[in-house]
Length: 236
Image 1: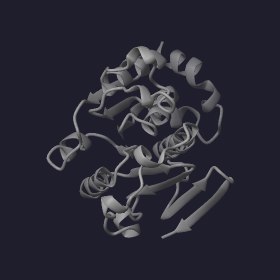
Image 2: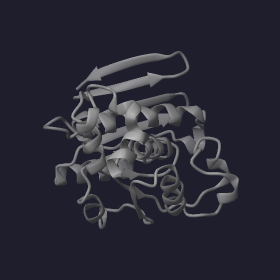
Image 3: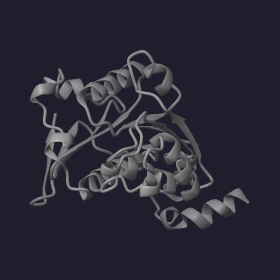
Image 4: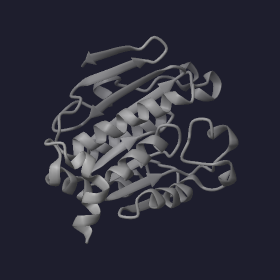
C-alpha cells in the first residue's frame, strides 16, 4: 500500500528521469532540519513536506503574531498566539500524513545546537539574524553537515549551499559576522511578502536536489533582486 500511496501522491515528480523511484526513495529516507518557521521557513517546510521528505525537524521558539501573516502563509489569523513549531507540525501533517515532523520549541544556542542538529542529514537555515546563521554554519562544519543558506531584505535575496562534499562554508565567504548595529533587518526596513516565498522556494528546490544527488550550487552565492529581476552568481 505504501508504494501505491507514494506513486499516487508523487508521480508527477517521479516521472522525471532524474528522479524516478530511486530519487523518491532518497527523499523518503532523508532527515532534514529547518531552522526557523518564519518567512523563509514557511515555504521551505511546505514544499519539502509535500515533496515527500520523510523526516523534517523544525526549530522555532516564537509564537505567531499578526504581522507575520502577510508573508508566513503557513499560518492563519485564528492561530495568532500559538507556538509556531507546534502549529507547523499540525499543518504539515495535514498537508502530508505520510511524513514525520519533529519539533524543537527552543532557541538554537551554542549549548544545544549539536544535540539538535546531529541526527539530521542536511540543515536548512531560514533564520533572520547573523548570530544564528554563524552558529548554524559553524555547527554544520563541526558535524560535517551540508547547509542550505538563504537571506532576504526588502526586494532582494541570497542563496548558497555550504559545506557540501568539500565545498566552502559561510566563513570562507564572510569570515566574521558584521556588527549587529550596522546590519539592516526586516523589522526596521521591511520586506515585500512575496520575497520570502520566492527565496524560500528556491532554498527548498536546492534542498530537494541535494537529497537526490542532483547538481546544486557549489561555491557560488546567488544574488537575486526581484525589483528589477537581476540574477547574479558570484563564485568564491
